[in-house]
Length: 134
Image 1 (cartoon, rainbow, N blue to C red):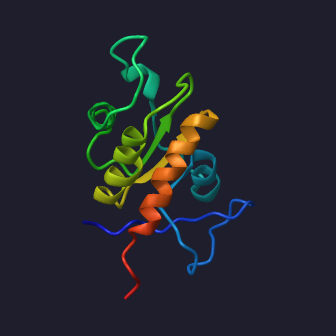
Image 2 (cartoon, one colour):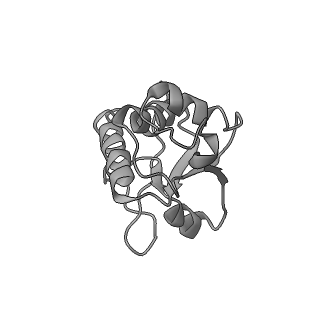
């Protein structure tokens, strides 16, 4: 497994000090303000099979992830119009995929509170499993 890329941001959008627990997952506004470049934006709502579909399973997350071309350096998942997601869905994107693609900066935008809570849970899980510094 690859090492999670270390990115952390203070409220002013500056890169944080190296000693903090960090993850490669951040809101897209933080990545834009730090890098001055935008990434690939994936509107999650466009991956729905039907209008009534809710995103709760790992399979559904992998379907969303299949829209990300290999070698993408920055990807932002736009959750606008998505009222809720399941923990397995968030875990597959923001923990499993993030660990397997450590060189990819992963971000989100447009997340309502319920969606954001699951994303932050998956990100905190990723922080628990960071390799110890050598």
